Image (tube, rainbow, N blue to C red; front, top):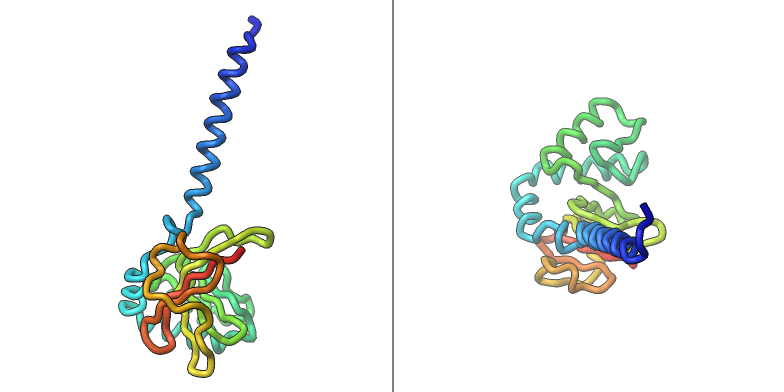
Amino acid sequence: MVLSSVSVRVVLGVLLAFYAVGTMASWSTDSPYINAPSDGKLIEKLHNHRAAFERLRQMVTEDLKAKSYFSDSDLDGKLPESRKQEYRSLLSEIQPGLIVTVDYDKAVRFIFASGGASAIGPGWLKAIQFTSDEGKQKGTKLQNLDNPNTLPVGVYFKEIEPNWCVLYQRTD
């Protein structure tokens, strides 16, 4: 059976339409607007798990020489097993999959959502951040970070209380 050129065009058109819809769907699933938790949810999380945040902050600062990135699936092999278990327990208490980083100025970031970050592409993250008394929160202070799609590339924060803020960062 020989396919007519009209049939081939229809089949190719349908395949192209499926490809376009799939591509758009994958882009939308990485949208900061869809994936980022609200400011209110992050503030509530800090208040409900304050002791765990404080203990994690203390631990990552102490273990900074060993590593600057901590998650339940990526803990430094040099840490004693009891220390790793404490990390796992605290991280899962706050939120499974939570990532904690320590910046060059010793700001501690608790990353709740991120996307698109790669060595060659843009990325974003939404976090709670602790900045010590010696450090100063970097970025633009805003009252609301709940509409990240409206923000250009940059670092933005909403103060929760002294030293603590909700942070949104978009890179290009």
